[in-house]
Image (cartoon, rainbow, N blue to C red; front, side, top):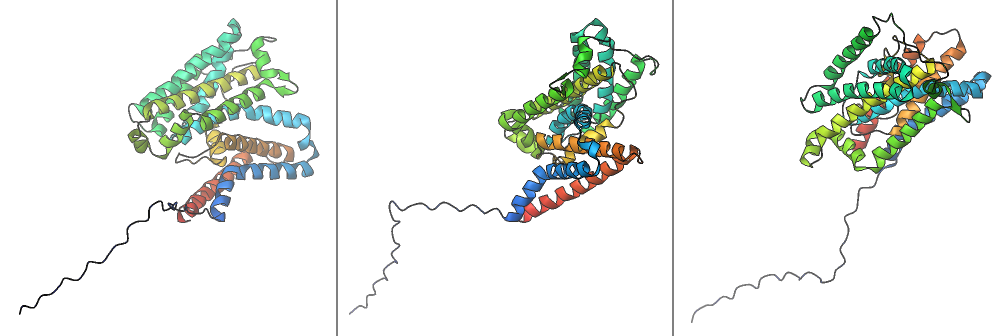
Length: 348
């Protein structure tokens, strides 16, 4: 008689339940620290600005006057226009050191062309300064040259062109009095100077461009990683060319408005303006490495620098060089805070 063994039955695996509700994968909750960090990066400069204004209004009664506020905002409008273009450039991970010289060149060209009327006074600086920005963009995007080197070269070239055009600064071109172009820089509507209104309109358009259009999202993508943006099929080179061209155009426009306000093309202005613009952009929360930033933050950064300058004038015993000391201190604090906030968000 043979011994037979029966194999053990295989373990039965329960069939999957039909019509079982799928459970969504829970998203990691954002901690309070990360939310506070994002809020500080976006609106921290606004809180500092409001605090400084509040304290200054109590300490110096003339600071809160309407005339002083108009003077501060008009003076800040030119830097604001330049800083707007710088914001777009830095978001893409670049830098534009030529804006100070381009600003001065735009003012001289506008004053020179104003003898032929309003439109030549605007078109000539826009065409020339836009061409300088276009050259920057082509060399950076197509020739893969470093933005620092390219814009440093055009800084020197624009300043040299300015000196050659004015006979080493010996010739000063004047804007005709009572002309429409002079009115653009000196006139006002409801107490607001035209340069202020132009700056506000440009910032409104810049905010819509950055937040509501595909071009704005492309800027953030290029600044985050150019290689990843290329793999996604985004027009990286064309985007860089456009932002540098816009930076040149805005710097030239600011110079033209300043010439209309001063009724002359001053040759010695704009020195170090590129550093003020970079400071305002970074203080406003835009990362120098690119990929993050806001138009409103840049506006608050510009106003903060302007208020600091006005406070130094209110004190009277300090000269304007202290503005650079205070601005440098703010810049160091903001950069250190940005690195700390970015590190804390990565760990949470």
